[in-house]
Structures are given as structure tokens and as C-alpha cells.
Image (cartoon, rainbow over all chains, first blue to last red; front, side):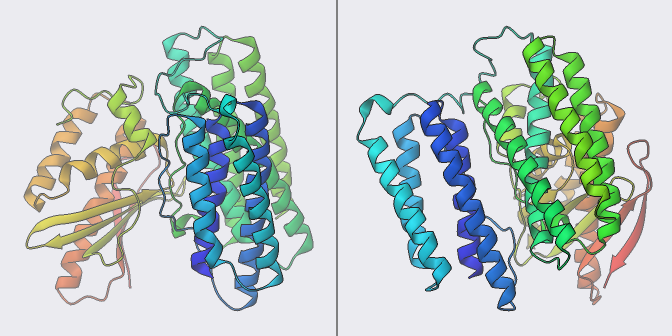
Length: 269
Length: 156
């Protein structure tokens, strides 16, 4: 089962990052919805593993291939989905996951039939140009560093909260973790799409167990609040540095969300 | 090798490549040595794995929860020392230090935590060779971004 969990984790990332890489809004949106379903699969598989007395981890063995067009990305996803089928458990959950995957495969096959949907992928070209904005190089550099820092942090938070949520018996804590996970999904999506727009889309690096195995919840929350404060400072600095009004407002909006995360985290104390 | 590499502010393509795909990132299953450098204030850590065979660093990996500067430096450094011997690795630290001298104080601290984790992995290897039952060797960085010192502690 832990192998199934790992492959589901990889598939969640695979679908998410396919969504970020593809600029067609309809495909992007559908794939993102499927990625959230895949994340729930992963969560449920984790719950079952723990219920059976097992353990899961966040090891990964995957690359984000720099595909050149939409169909290459979708064909790679199809292969990945087909490869995982044999690993699903013979349970009600396993059956549910298989039917979800079958529907995703059906959707992907429909996309592949429409040549008009096949377009060039620019998410990995490293050009660091925002098409409809003329940002000076120093602002692009600041934005680049911010996106690398924060996309990793959001991924880290999703997995750490997921790890803790799976192990808590406290309903209030469970709800807080869910809110924080949902919020981080939104941030990861936002930053991933921005990275793709700049041509620097990359997988967040793998989490080491030292990061997600939390032994002291109180200390974790205190440290987490300090991290959220640091993220707020980064957002504010970036918002001040970026002279584009639209982007600046976006980072202010993220900044205010980080403020509320601190309030949510305080509920864990 | 990285004489002309500019660090993130300059953001040349080579640095961008390290950001997008860090080299030697992850963990080793059967390492000869494992070292951790920990910044207790920020809880930032770097863990460094080495596989030594006949005096050569046949494989190295590192992982961190730290900032992107730490990732880039870890990626560059690990790429520099892999398939070389320990003497070369020591030289590589000096070379990287020379290069990093041009960086901000915070980036130099990022470099220090990477190098300290590597040094700790060597210490772990030596301790195990001497018969110690040590899972990993830990260096605690004395301060956060302002400090450069370290204290030693072993995990048994």
C-alpha cells in the first residue's frame, strides 16, 4: 500500500503540474479539478494505511519532463494513470479510485481527438517573460525567487498538514488542518500558474522526513506562525517591489490570507 | 567549474537550472555517512548523505527545508564533489567559500549550513569507522542568519 500511496502522490503532482503547464483554460481547469480528486485519493489511501497499522511517507521517484506540446503532456499522463491501476487495493476505495481514473482517461482521450487543443508549451522555456507585462529585470528576479521559495513552502505545508491531519483524533484540529490544506492548494495553484507563465515551472523538491514528522505540535505551531510571518514579509516586500498594480494587489491579497493562517494556527495551541 | 557563476540575484541560466532541478537532491539508502546541520532558531536544516568507496565519494545526496539559496549552493557543491575524493571536497569548500565571499551575509550562512552538513557526514563516517553506533552526526549552528559558528552533538 505504501507503494500505491507514493504513486498516487506522484500522480497528484503529475496532474497538478500538467494543469499549470497547459495554458488552455478549459483543460487547465478540468485537470486541476482532477488533481484535487487525486489528492483526496491520496488522503484516503493514507487513512486506510494508518488504520491497518501501516505508515506512509512522502518519498517520490519522478521527474517533471519538459514536454513541448499539450498532447505530449497528456499522453504522459495517460501512461502514468494506466501504470498505477494494478496497484490499487481490491476495496471499495480502490474501486472508487479506478472509476475516477477511468473518467479522467476518458476526458483525456477526448482532448487527444481534437488537434485544435494541441499547442506549444512555454512553461519550461526559462524565458522569464510575462507576456502582457513589461516588468524590469530586477522585478522579474524578485518574482522568480519568491515563486521558487513559496511554491515549495505551499507544497511542504500541504503535505505536513496532511500528515498531521491523518493522525489527529481532535475534530477541531482536523478542521483547522483541512482549512490550511485548502488554502495552500490555492496558493500552490496560483504560484504554479505564475511559474508556468514565466517559463520556470518546476516541481517542488521532495520533502525529507525530518520536515514532516512532527513530534511536538506546540513547537510546530509556534515555528509555523514565525514562518507565516516571514512569508507575509516576503509578500509585502514583493508587493512593494513589483510596480505592476495587478500583481502588486495579488500579493497583498496573498499577504492578508497569510495573516488569517496565523489565526487558524493559533487554534491548534 | 563555477568560477563565473553568479548567485540568485544575477539569476543566470545555470543558477536557474539548479533552482528548477537541484542536482543530487534526496537521500541515499545505504550511506557511509550522514550529517545534519541545524539552525535551531529557524529550524532550517540540511542533511547530507555520502557514499564513500575506496576513498571516492561515489554518491552524495542532500535535502533541506531551507531557502532557495541553500538549495542552489547544495546543488552546486554536491555536483562539484561527486566522484572526487575527500581532499578534493575540502578544496571545493574553500573554492566555494571564495566564491561565496561575494555574497550577502545571509547567503554565506546558507553556504555554511551546507558545508557543515557535509563535514558532519564525514564525521559520522569516521565515528562509525571507529566503532561508534551513530545514526547521524549533528552540528547545531550557533545562531541564525547572523552567526557562523557551530556546536557538535551526536545522535546514537
